Length: 513
Image 1 (cartoon, helix red, strand yellow):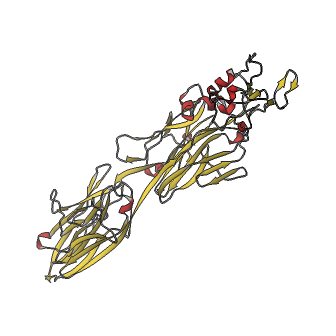
Image 2 (cartoon, rainbow, N blue to C red):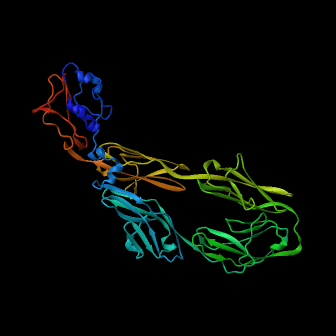
Image 3 (cartoon, helix red, strand yellow):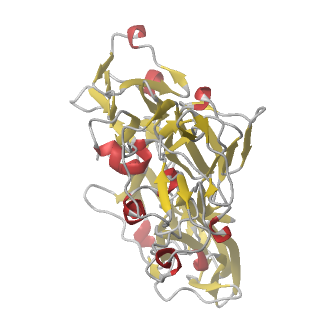
């Protein structure tokens, strides 16, 4: 009876009980004050009532009993596999930077302390292969980086005795802005009232650049209005209806968004022909957004549409079979439709229409909104007895729907014999010590990838009663029921048998094991 009161203080999954009862039920065990144990994992030996039968036994290590997966990773006395604290970020390195080093950061915690290796485009980097390489803790440093040698996708591999994990891919790219060709540009000659396109033809650059046009001399810039438009995609200058005041010299100025470097093109002269004035004509759409526009959820979408024509065309927008979002804004005299914080329901078919007194023209294109993969269900660190089954599942959302890959210690995990891999589901039948290690579920679509990591420990320890020793003496009232607990720790789960003196205990009407 003194053991009955103590049962709630012990992990039910370790319970193994011996009960000896009299032929009739005692008042204690038949009363409403009897302790009740609803945990289905409770294992019992010697049950006095048939209603207590059938509970399965499960054995776990002391770590699983007293530490959650997160808790034992905070406990420095418990060894565990690597967990990333910091993963490398994408880097855009200006080629004209005074700082002649690139640092890709990586930090992981673990016990023992993790060591680090780096991969470029999936191949491990040999630090000794290039004098420019160095590793400080987990940070990979490249001195005097160059685009030809160092552009690529980098990953950090953190490892200790429990296994390895692979970081996200970080892209190292370089920011630069070349010079325009010095070749003289030919004059463009048009009739008054005619439309014209002046080409910018930007120099090599990375990443994006911003365009503007200088008229005749700096700092006189072309002002955009319903008649003049500069495409943010091509940098070209469009004049829907040329006037005599437009005659002059035009210079394209480009600015790198990262380095702020600027370069000027050679001038393009614009002249008027002397063979008459251009008559009226219907709109001709010269610049428009692509047939398929893709945008990440939460970003800002800008769609361009501009037409040449006489009279100057008016631009209007519509969403086919729907309404343009109320948050949308029209920019540059309605030549740009801007949708901030774009959402999935903003997707659809959009139309721009150019119209004047001579006619109209239109263009349609599809807006698709995608989302990066996002975890709905991650993995949890798991500890299993040898021979137990493992079932891990990771779930993510995204558009397009993400696909899944599995890694073990940073290497792709393929189906074989005991191992089944079905999308985000990993099953290992009858685990053994060779299955221990660090596992990662990788969810990816064409726009991004995310990693979820967890450690699998396979338990192996001899049976022990260190935590739950049997009492040497139990005093009970004659005629009452008694429970003797046997709660060993061990993995795989111990087989339990009972003896009275030197004889094996066998079940009978009074005794159940």
